[in-house]
Image (tube, rainbow, N blue to C red; front, side, top):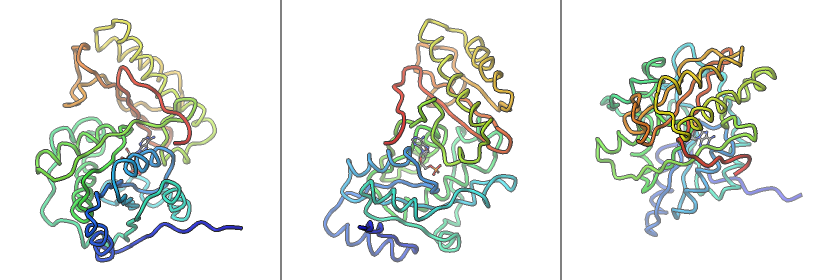
Length: 294
Ligand code: AMP
């Protein structure tokens, strides 16, 4: 039986930079996909976008302790390097950076990495240090990898907004590319955390997407009152008795503040917990869905 060639992997900043120097000698354009592993078709879509747009694609697999609060799932977060590596090979990734926590800590900036006011809203209201933790590690990874383009999912829309603002504010020489959300056929957004769901929770989880769709359809059909749209979305969310809703909002896609003017391109956000499993989702009013395997 033929065995697949493993993806080239480095675990230290030094080895990463040695490999990148070789790629850089040929003037190759570096694309970068930061991940925490537990890879699925949503991650594959980012890799595919990078491989298509760039000459040399680096994927980082690093479960970042700084973005977890003490009560969150850092210890149990899905880790399966063999499966992740196979998925990277299948997408034509050139290099995986898979550092230990100790190795990554050496590369973290001592100077605090700033996050804009966007970071204090929604996810940030519930998880105060989350985006500062994301920004610190993303800034360190950008500085180690030096990519021309970095690919992030719209699935984590607020994270994308925080990273885009960081890049603008610090004038970092990288272009941040937002990529669409991939979903299960019933609408549930692919997420590494979906494996935690019990059978009942999994049955109910598409309610997040159904609420987004109801909100988007109302706006498309002329609804102009934000509170009414949010109330209709909340009614849908209430049909899942296993879900504790955290927020459900119609917001401006740049500032992420609630919007009143639906002529603007609104973004709909939802988040909540099934037991200990926190799920979030979002969509534009007009959005084509992407289902299944990328
Ligand atoms: P994570 O491993 O959860 O930190 O995610 C790594 C990247 O994959 C982030 O930019 C996420 O937004 C993106 N991502 C996660 N889930 C999806 C999805 N269902 N569709 C597209 N991108 C995703």
